[in-house]
Amino acid sequence: MAGTLLGLGGISAAQEKEKSDADAQASPDGQTDPLKRPVSQKQKKQNAKALKAELTDHDKKWLNQDVLWIITDEERKAFMLLSNEEERENFIESFWQRRDPTPDTAENEFKEEHYRRIAYANEHFPAGIPGWKTDRGRIYIVFGPPDEIESHPSGGTYERPMEDGGGSTSTFPFEQWRYRYIEDIGQEVIIEFVDSCMCG
Image 1 (cartoon, rainbow, N blue to C red):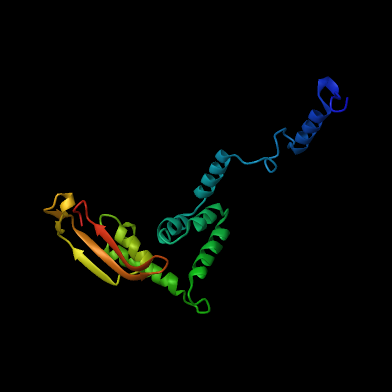
Image 2 (cartoon, rainbow, N blue to C red):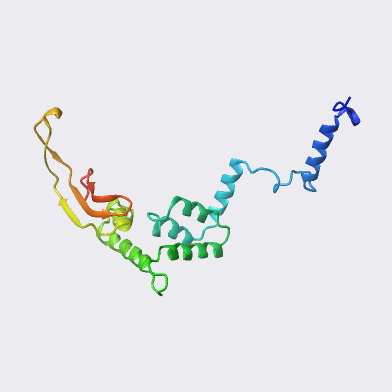
């Protein structure tokens, strides 16, 4: 009769042990100890939302403006999990230190160049929004100034291939930026910006 022993009220010994283990994990108010039970996806989202709500205006600006185009997804996730201002300040400091090409000097050339690029983008590429938010601003901030710029502010004429019906058509205003080399991308990189709304 092993395994079929009954305890009080018809509960098997195995069920009694499970209940005893659950009672051991329960907190004094009868709820399961939150430190010992798995966190649901809903609770994870609520926790992340609460942490995000705790971000100061400075933290939000740093994350969503200053480094928006250069922070990695992993870094963004790690920053969002930080629980207090001291941790966030330490994170920001180490973020810039990791990118400093000359860590033995007082200046951080990467950080200085990054903020210079943002200022340049805001001055030269606004389009009803700050320049850092535009496509050209983003590319400039991430990759720096192009080696060559070919600008067609009034569009241009385009000869369509015969398989597309031939003839000529006009294009929207556009600008091409040429980079001789971009690390991790390659050589002779051409990025084209098209003004499809004709708004500048």
